Image (cartoon, rainbow, N blue to C red; front, side, top):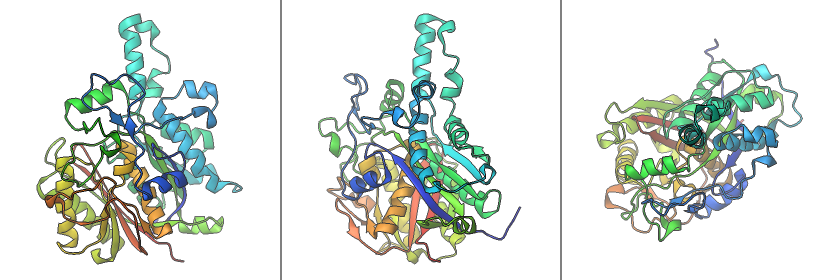
Amino acid sequence: MSTDGRRVVVTGMGLVSCCGKSVEENWKNASAGIPGYDSIKAFDVSEYSSQVAGEVSDFDPLEYIDRKEAKRMDRSAQFAMAAAVEVMKSLDGFDYDGKDIGTVIASGIGGIKTFETQHSNLIHKGPSKISPFFIPMMIADIASGLVSIRYGLKGPNFATVSACASAGHGIATTYMMIEQGYTRAVLGGGTEGTISPMALGGFCSMKALSTRNDDPKGASRPFDVDRDGFVMAEGSGLVLLEDLEYARARGAKIHAELVGVGLTGDAHHITSPAPGGVGAVNAMKMAVRDAGIDPGQIGYVNAHGTSTQYNDKSESEAIRTVFGDKGGPHVSSTKSCSGHMLGAAAGFEFIMCVKAILEKTIPPTANLDNIDPECQLNHVPKKSIGKELEFVLSNSFGFGGHNVSILIKRFEQ
């Protein structure tokens, strides 16, 4: 394979979340600091300690796929298909060779709603009532497979699974494959559809979720002294990454350039970050080295910023270690608007970073009323700010000690 370090650019984006069903709608709400999550309506949550989530309301899969297909897809895969439809508009009119384009769509959990439904069939009706589509609907890689089948994408095709860093690993892996010449382009990102009784109950048992049920729109408040947990959310964020020369040859519109990634492990604890955020520090430093720049050139960090006590404190320490205690890049967490999309979170946040560069605007951390003294950073609370950005960093971390940092650059010829 080639080792000439091909440049990797972003040419297409697709997004479905509680903040909207397109990239522009999501950006409009996130940049205005308008949360999309609310009280859960999908099922009765009266016995749950947390009753808030980022549901994609009024989502109709039949706008993207036919009825027969929809019945054979978990909600997580339906979201991926919807996001892929928006992404693939960037290839309209281009007669691509499917062998040139791969598909890497991550998921932290896969088809858990399908698992719950079919397990109920087993318990109440017996094994003969388990759907023959149960396995392909449930497995975490199926969204990647379904999208590749629909669009005839015959390049590398797989899923990455690393909890809340899943989409980050997917995008980072995609970048490395294109850079090293394994493929010319990849449709990648993440998808998740986990707002279900079992998933909600599991996170409630961990005491990881916000219980601000009487103020649902204020439930996610990263870096705020009164934060009390994250808000689980669903959706999909996908991007089309291409070898620059491939993109130029077809006259593609180029939104940004991906210039560095950092991938590390904490080797510390199944859920808590390492002391001092050392794994996050190493990931950010690795991404900076990969890009060949100085940390001071980074103007904005889209933080993992989950709104949990441990993550926000640890990530704040890590950012200060990398960038210094004074000044430093502006920092915000768009999970304050989107909620935490788990394995799809990095897809949403990567797109927010690209839009921040294009729109010369840094989206805010909504609900950041009182900054935690242990989370002192150059925050952007509640309202976006205008800023010309050359380099933007996106952080994603996951249970198991998984850390991903991705560096995005304003595209220049």
